[in-house]
Structures are given as C-alpha cells and as structure tokens.
Length: 433
Image 1 (tube, rainbow, N blue to C red):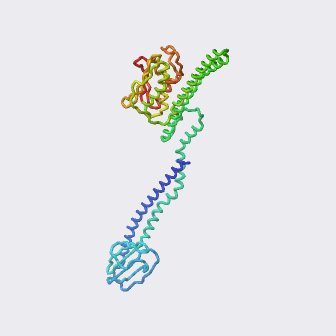
Image 2 (spheres, rainbow, N blue to C red):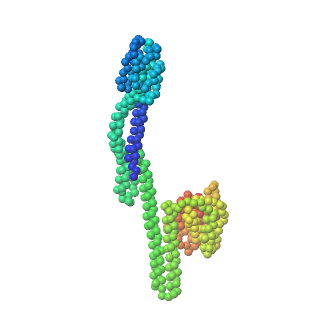
Image 3 (cartoon, one colour):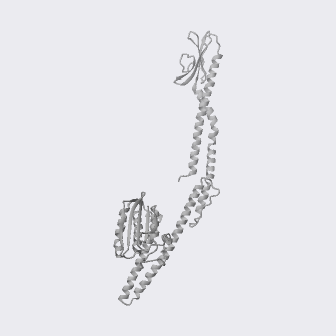
C-alpha cells in the first residue's frame, strides 16, 4: 500500500541529498580554484627565493619520498645542476611560465623561470591540490551529512503532524452511523484538506437526497400497489364464491383486469427505477426517425381498436446519443397517454423536426388536454389530474407514473419536456433534445 508519508520522506531526503551533492561539488570546485591560485603563487615565491649566483658544482640530489614540490635547476649551458626528486616522472626540459604536464603518475603543475644565471623549474602533482579541495568540501558538508538521520526523523514527524487532519476526517467517517449524512465540520482544517471535506459534504448531500427520494419512492410504490393487490384479492374471493358459470366468468374477467392493472403498475415502477441516474446505459447513436416509426407502428393496432387515428404527420432525419430502449419507453408512454385520453374519432399526430440543430419531437392529440395549473404537477410520481377535470373517456386506468418516467428519461438525455395546447384543443407534448 502506498503511503503519502513515506513518499514525502523519501522525496524530501532525496532532494536534500541532491542539494548536498550539488553544494559539495560547487564547494570542491571553488576550493580547487583557490588552491590552484595559492599553490601557483607558492611556486612563484619559491622560485624567486632561490639564489641568483651560478652553481659551481652539481648539488647532491635527494629523494624525500613525499609528494611535495619537485625542483630542477639548469645552468646556462643546459647542464642539470640540481634535481630534488630524481625519480619524479618529469620531462628533462624547462618551459618558462606555468604549464600542466601529463605523466604516467598523474598530472603535474609546472612553473619555469630564469633566476640569475640559472633556469629553475618547480613542479607539483595536481593530486595534492585535488585532495586539499576535497578535504575542504568534506569538512564543510560533514555536519549536514551527520544531521541527515535527524532531518529524516524531523520530516517524518512534521509530515505526520500535517496529515493529522486527514486522520481526523477518516475517524469521523469511520465512527458515523450509516444513516448519518449530515455534513462534516470544516473548521480548523488546513486549506489543502478543506476541498476534500467540501467534496465529501457535497457527496453526502447528494446521497441524502437520493436516499430520501428512494424512501419516498418505496413508500409511494407500496401505497399504490396495495390498492390493486387488494382488489385482486377480493376478485379472487368472488371467483371462489361464484355459484354458477356466468358469475364465475364475470368474476374471472374482473380478476384478469385487476391482474393486468397490477402488472402494468409493476412494469411502470420498474421502468421508473431503471430511469433513475444509476440505471443509465452506455450512450449510442440513435436514429430518432426510425425509433418514432417503430413506436407508432407498435401502437397503431391499439389506437385503431380505440377508434383513434394515430400517425406521423411530418418527420426529418435526426440523431441523438443515448439509450435507445429508454427513449422507446419515453415515446411509448407519451403515445399511450395520447391514445388513451383521446375519444373515439379523434386523432394523435406525431411530428419530428430539427430546429437550430436540435431534434424536436411533438405529440399532439385531440383529447381533453391538461389545465395549465396542472401541467407541472402531472410530472410528479403517482399524481393524476383531479376528478373535476373534463374527461371524455371513462375507461382510462393509470398509475400516475407515465409522465414521471418521461421526464426522468428526458433528463438523462439532456432533453426538456414541455406541455402545451394542441391546435385540435388537446394536449401538445414537446420533447426538445
């Protein structure tokens, strides 16, 4: 499991080590430059301090065995008069001024000068200077290196203290009751943690709304199912008590109608549950023209039995993205409502056109319509227009879920549903995508 605390400790220490390494390299380069200046000056001073008189004899050579300065002196005739380190791997020649000589035993810094009647050459291995610069850099950085473990402990503690608000939020969520959806307090929280708490509070608010909606839906569904189920039970008792075939046949017909109504209500409840946001299917390209023709063709026989003229008045090619089966339920509900409430001899016209690039579906009927003050409430679950409304048909049975399902599916597809008055005086339903 990945730990933010461990990651911060690792990266902070890695950055510190990188900074120490860069600082050490810069200190080493600066110390080396200063050492070069100092030792070059020392070579010049040593050369200037040598006697200017000519040597009368070859001085005895000696090998001190250290890695210090090597001195060679020639007279005017080019005869080597003095060599302090005979085994030093330097070329037996002298170049005036400073130069760097590469040998098998490393690089040497060489200085040549004319002192009186003599030619003097002084040389020093560069390893001495490099070692001195490295020692200076190490002495400068070693306190930081020693403090690295203490720095790691301090970082671990500081990061843990910084993450403490997250632990408090986690503890508050762990100890909550599943039904406790009140918002989390955001006082005394760091600025970095507040967006997380605000997002959690927004999620809790949406969950509370969803749970309230679900509870209301379950309560309403149970209430609405109780009536048709009670009617089915009574009708079953009437079948059992029938004394002759005629009474039994009539009771069976009523029982079948009751079962049909209960089945229709269960189907509508299932459709509404599927139309909730959690039930959204993967979007696909849908041909609205073809879908509307299929829906009208499926309801044409039922409309003919009801004596209603159902047809497509106008249609244009139009496409939307969404769930084809959900849109089929939407249009089926609208067409079913229109044919149910339109009296015999009436008509239902379906129209599809595109306005400013937006597909618009209109379903107009010649039925009683819906009063303007009722047009918003009919989208509520289980709500039906009051008994005082002008109802031409008297054989209409419903659950009050059809338009609620229509609006829910429309919202899923970023569409709006509006109710108005048709030219024939009935209801005009407009679905705008």
